[in-house]
Image 1 (cartoon, rainbow, N blue to C red):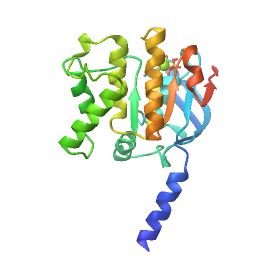
Image 2: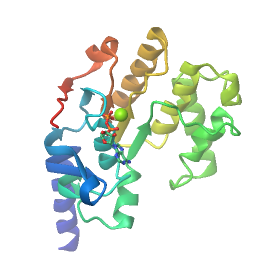
Image 3: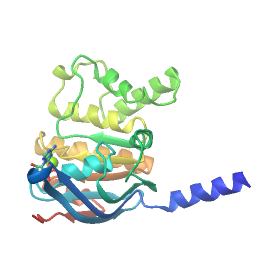
Length: 234
Ligand code: ADP
Ligand code: MG
């Protein structure tokens, strides 16, 4: 019986969207300084979808990404990641949710005292993989982003596009179900910006991963399955 029930439960969870948001509000500050930045957001993103979100600066896109990424607590409304509710979630549940998510930020956030290989390796430290399997995965993913020659280089010896490709490798090496990317091409020139998103898209498609990418970069809009244009509410 127990076995049947758990199967049923996992089937239910599997059919849920990757991200499901209902009436989400968010506020910063307290008392007279309290300021609302998200207003009754409703949004569903299906598994495997590649969604690009654009909108004015200050409209709350990064805030929304940090809430989806389980990096910040939900205050009101509902936000489900892979069927799991984050409103009132415990620290442990939030940590578990984070394991299904890869993040790519505007600034690549690589550690300068670690090589490309070691930066990617860090993302596997919380995962249950043997050292040998980890080594294979790190080499494969660095090859996939075209950095086979640069595996043992430090960030200071890499170009902007190369550093962002290490960041992509780091986000994807744990084979997350969802990638959240916050203006990943902002620091890159046209060509490397597009290259970086194309690599990300290709790898994510191979892994069946869902992507939500925030950008101001009009040149990559055609890579999306769906474009969400954010308006300023306040
Ligand atoms: P976007 O990414 O669309 O530019 P943000 O989510 O960064 O928007 O910011 C939305 C609003 O919330 C802005 O007015 C910003 O100043 C404010 N804000 C963002 N982060 C914080 C914070 N940690 N504390 C207080 N206000 C914040
Ligand atoms: Mg932002």
